[in-house]
Length: 123
Image (cartoon, rainbow, N blue to C red; front, top):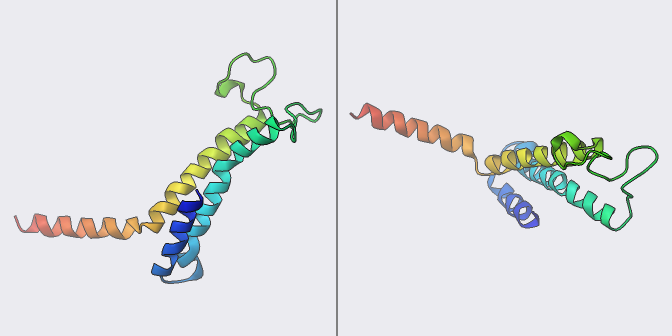
């Protein structure tokens, strides 16, 4: 993730426009890395007993509810939903957005469309 962030940050000098236009892909990629790594951090904190699995207020680090018996989406606790589903999936969505923005995919798709129209008009 660090290498990907460095790669996107390095390419910020090839972009132009406002601050957000230039550094937006880097910010989004950094946010995606944080969100993707959140569940892994939760696992580490739980394994090292820094964030215990069971707390009286219900916000322990355990991913699954007590007594459910299965490890599936139906048995996820609120912490499990927050870290496993919300953070991880939104992190991967942001990673896709950041890398596509960095690759300037919208401009490239417009170029492909224009070339397609040009080639079709030659027939």
